[in-house]
Amino acid sequence: MGRGNKNKRKNSGPSLADKADRHVLYEAAVQCAESEIDFVDQTFQKLSNRQAVKLREDFCGTTNSSCEWVRRRDSNQAYCVDLDPDVLAWGKENHIKKLSDDEQKRINIFTADVMDAVATSMDIVLAMNFSYWIFKDRQTMVRYFRSVYESLVDDGVFFLDSFGGYESFKEMEESTKHDGFTYIWDQSFYNPITGDGRFYIHFKFKDGSSIKKAFTYEWRVWTLPEITEMLTEAGFKAEVYWEGEDEDGEGNGEFEATTDGEADAGWIAYIVAQK
Image (cartoon, rainbow, N blue to C red):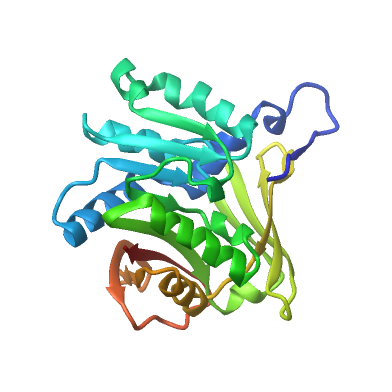
């Protein structure tokens, strides 16, 4: 994950970019821990006929989803795994410290490689925000999926997300306005032979300042058939959960298991893999 460069205005004084926190902007623009945990919690209960207790968040970043998990029930425990000590430190200062004393006791932080499977006997493992796409070859990805499989209890469930659509293979930028800033998703590079892609997140502000390359991702763009086939090879039973539409044809935030998807320009889906 790259560090962002803040471009200042020519006039004196700190710009909005200077005063901004890239992690706060990221969470506001692309992450909704509440709805994610809603889906994970409810789907697990439907599949396993019980409530989950132990959740591991791989590539956890700021630990936002794990904090939401421990707030849900007094019995819930979260295990957060990430290689980046800086982002984990940010999460401790900005999320974990805001939890109650009891909630803080039920969240565990590991500065580690997700391949090490540092927390086992999990009910749920998460790999969200397409983070697992850092594994660019099939052998490595299957090895990661198998390590997750071994980390789960007998009725455990592995939750992932994925994006796609014909625009996902296009070098392009997409801007979305938010309260106080504009989020820019930059698909800077794509190699159709290897599937490798380079992606940036930029932020722009009303005073003309910006944070260029606030986040950098070097990923392989995996397709849903490839992902589900690798999960099956690792031992899982994998299903794709596709988002429904409202009356205007826009996503309604409701995801259901299906084998039929729309050939949209861009989509986001969940993959639910049962042990």
